Image (cartoon, rainbow, N blue to C red; front, side, top):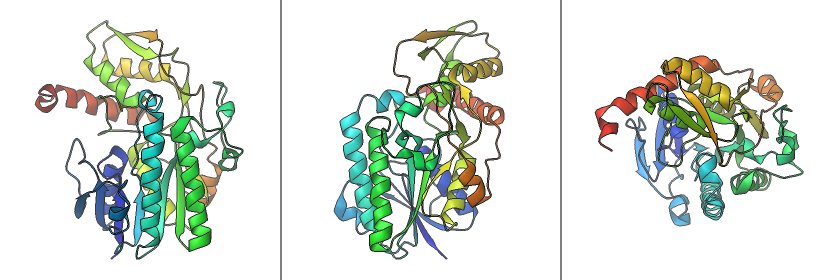
Length: 322
């Protein structure tokens, strides 16, 4: 049986990935500095490790056949726009040490989760979206310290493949959402934050969002996202690949749908704050051709599952006692 390691296994996507791998009968070692927030990990082993420590990273993958590298200092636009130095420092250390560990692993095979933040900002300054092709990340002008670090790590891993014989997969995610995502505390992303605000609002309240709500994004439901990762790992494709859904929607439209779900007749209040790029969507033609795979969950179904999970969690005794 293959032995698989998942870094960032205490995080939202990593936690779901461990669950998906276990359903497929895999042996899994979860690695993170923290446990999953809302349910226990299903990993065969869960190790508390800080991958910024090089000595640790060089030892923990020795018996591992495949590594899914999701460990990262990440959050929503509020977090990413505030802690630039810490983000690029932490993530370069995590990625460098993880890649070094992969070279010493039994299987020398790694899938790295990158981000659509690697794409040039000047291609994302309009809500009239031009889908972004994988090869358009260079010449480089990525979004913030997080985007720069992801692009640098992609290049580092690509050279590890060519120079050191490491088998590499690189996935570029857009916005992943779903039940068990963080929805408060400062690191939450837009879907989690909006679900929380709508769930906690009273009838006829106002709900604040940063900017005018016209920013457009593509969203992918978390169970689809982890399925895409597994499909990519099992493929023979070693170049960066967009793993995203095909549609896009404005933040204001997301609020409108959640408002209908809640039945609260809420009003939207636009306030100043970091908003990220104006519009972003990936070109998914390579994903379709190479993986012969597509996400299954439509946005409205995924949003409904996520909203009602957040609503129930907020109403629970555990959340009330925080």
